[in-house]
Length: 270
Image (cartoon, rainbow, N blue to C red; front, side, top):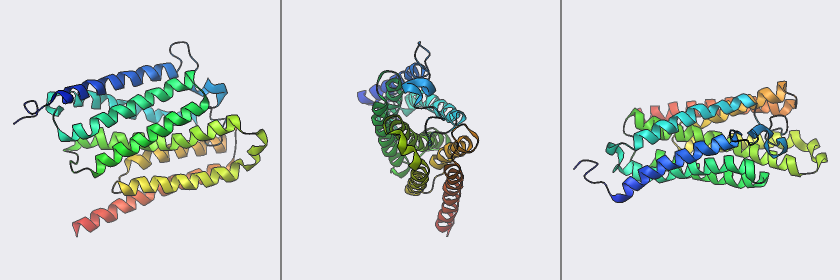
């Protein structure tokens, strides 16, 4: 029995919802970027999301990570809509969740324009939680990726999305705190920033380890940390301890999973 013969009505509904979720995310992205007369993200919320407003916000160049994430999601949306994908158990397990992550992504972008800075924190925490569930289900499911395309469009893209949002959540909370706490709290920024980055290292390694030391999540985390180091060491809001710590953490979260993956493959081979 082929996929279309065993398909259920909910399968077609899922495919349509995934497409609708992607369209919503793209519209939300356009709204968030100010394409419809709004304020660009870096200038929204009184400039709270500018790299020079918060000590834990990466340089603007870091946000180029959205290009491969969005491109991967776009290809996934087309691929999952094919009749051959309609009744696959893996799509049934993950399609609804991926759609949820795209909706929450779009909601965050809209909240930047129309809600408060703390509302954006709520949105991004929900997005992070949805991505954790989606990623762990993808890489630890009893229906593993079937071929390289499946692995890239689901495991890798979701991993990149998760890693970036994990770091963006830290930046988002830091931006919200910077916008609301007393100005004299800035004296503790270096110490707090270093501690937070150590926590980021622990979380990044935990995510990678829970997925069998996969590299995708830590790639985007390390990318963001690298650009965080650049803007803290060379930008207008300089903080050398945070910048150096960001470099060290970026190296650690890349090297440890690579070594862990190598050791895991070697153990499995034996």
